[in-house]
Length: 160
Image (spheres, rainbow, N blue to C red):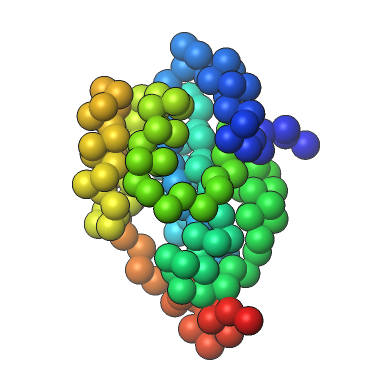
């Protein structure tokens, strides 16, 4: 079993282990892992040596996605870490400010930030990339058919 799930307080372990390697950073909820996620992660990994996933919190899903999570953050992290393409998973607390993400990206200093086409936060990610001389790479088209809200249209994910 890989020991690659890190909290923010353990980021020093990450920065030491990725030194000198081409690092690709992605972020998301990955709540109900599906083909679209796997495709995105595989194509992101092909952009470099190390794939780091910033995994959103349960609170993020509740507040931003306006629904209840299917798997909690720890379960989602364990699922992701078992994928051969994922090298590290960073457990994010709920970030209420964009600056929190920017600070984290500046700490990790990825070479590439991988996104899907029509990523709603691409302008923020471009700003983050510019600060550290990273590149934004679109690795997949937007795969609308493969989203948790489409896959589980009748599930009660509205909350308690």
